[in-house]
Image (cartoon, rainbow, N blue to C red; front, side, top):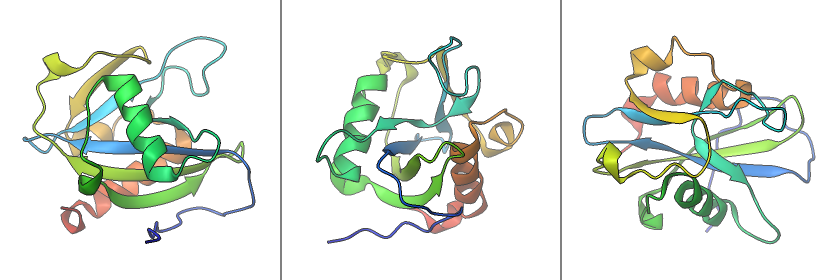
Length: 149
């Protein structure tokens, strides 16, 4: 079955794809990552959802799940992932995002990448400096949060 992701930006051919997860906890807070601050990181010091590049022949959902585990140590049931949207970054990366809901204790998280993380309310997220393509997707998600399980 092919999943449908609303497209939020111009969409041009690209060989670079990335996927991530917008996780909501039992209190409807959203888990975000504070990106590392170094010369190798795109968007240093900005906030984003957890995710990363699709590798080889990997499908989008598999990449999102793998990256989420690598970066948080939290596992998700693939059946709980719901497509949110896709946006293309100014560098050409095609970014796909899912959402999922999971009972989560912050003590369970073992940060594998990033400078930090936080569980945030929608109002808090709207005040943060966000990675641009991820921010486009996050704002779409927040504006339509009632439409997601």
